[in-house]
Image (cartoon, rainbow, N blue to C red):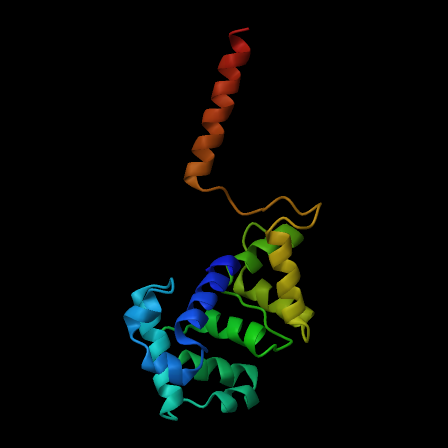
Amino acid sequence: MSSAAQRTVWERLRASLGSVCPERVDRASAEELQSCGMTFKKAEYIKDFARKVNCHEFDLAAVERMDDADAITALCSLRGVGVWTAEMLLLFCLERPDVLSFDDLAIQRGMRMVYHHRKVTREQFERYRRRYSPYGSVASLYLWAIAGGQFPGFEKDYAPLTDAQRKARRRSRDKARRKESSK
């Protein structure tokens, strides 16, 4: 979800619920949450999470005190939360300083662009993670910016071309050759 879409959904939730807290989310229907701009499945996940917090089945305060690995494991126990989502929660909500997500495609793209790799293997990624530690979160922000084209000099993504990209490139070259030969 883009930042703009997230802001829109958040504002709609606040307008609908008054305040976005586990008690109010738990009382809302999945349809009411969905009408704020999310999928029905996400609305169900959010309701389930709110219910678990309200019933003391999930302790948010405990997650804040856990190390990163334990916090990720705890968050992944929730429906709809995978490793990438848990890592983003650690980075953006809990402001953990050393989060670098292998599953984040933009981070991998940024690494390919900086280090001129065609593909970033898990082994390479772990080397970079150790190199960036204990500031992996700062590295994440820079890699996202590089992947998003915000730094001159880092325009080329070294990923191998897809079949569709190769065909398009071939068609473009063939068209240019035909045009040149017809002069």
